[in-house]
Length: 168
Image (cartoon, rainbow, N blue to C red; front, side, top):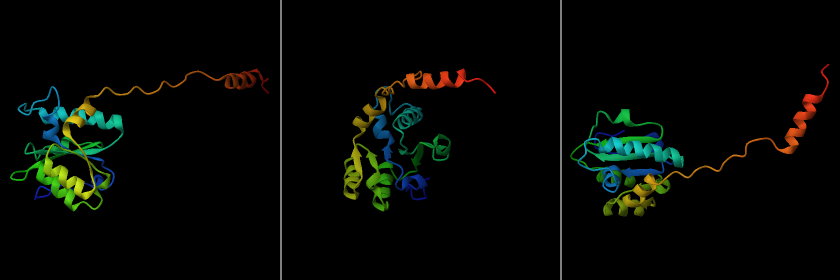
């Protein structure tokens, strides 16, 4: 949720949410997305949801301006979507939240903003630049190892014994 002053507060933020993402910074680094596209936020949100599901993590993406009243419908159990109302910026809201966080060490802050990165490092959060993160989001998912199908020789033998037993 966004407080009246544009700060971030959400129960999953403290300790469980590893990604805090500056949305427009990532859009600027994402091939196929443009900041002048009216649907850029929604397109990024879809990409982030798929990425977070793939890496089994959660996160919050923060945008400047946008749809403050409509952000709730874009959030789900993997991704919280926040729009910071004017005059505050996403950078300011992220930096403020980092300064006030009880335990920011578990966070990965995704930004291209030098001041946000400095604040994140100062409080002990990890920093990932937006270009690197964009490449990770767009990377092809790693195929899971194929699970061996079929029964082992021992399992076949056990089933044969079970079915060959006389009923009674």
